Length: 182
Image: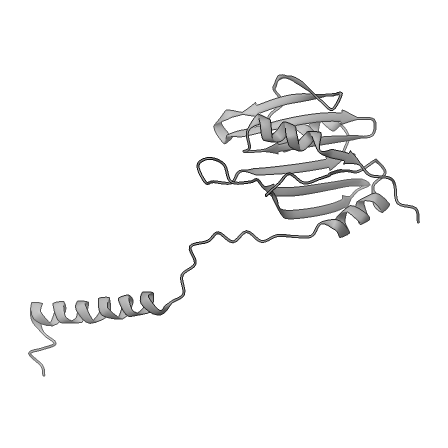
């Protein structure tokens, strides 16, 4: 028995046994070829924002087809109410999804919030969406495009890796929500 565990032959035999074990493990382990993106329900955050935010809240209505809501986070710190709502877009021609985030806040100054969310303070133009002017910003090194709209008392930023057409369509789907009554 000692000869089998010594030398090159023993090493090769041990490696083959290990590789056989890995192969069997991979063979019996379930493998999913489908993507799984966790879908969240952000309706509670919308209700809380309608009640708590001192500004009019905007939500996408309807959410673009095949988009998946992936994150929602409401914060209220030092008198500033902020909401971030993230989506995975529909699959593009390349089979990949992009990401889009809607961010709203009453932070002062509004430009500081917009600069942070857009990762840029440089305007690359404006676009009219549903009769309102939105500022376009782009940060090419991060493949990030943003649309910024400053409202009285708040700012809305639509940002992400999606193309301008998807960002524009998403911004066009935003509807102002009525303030909740207590």
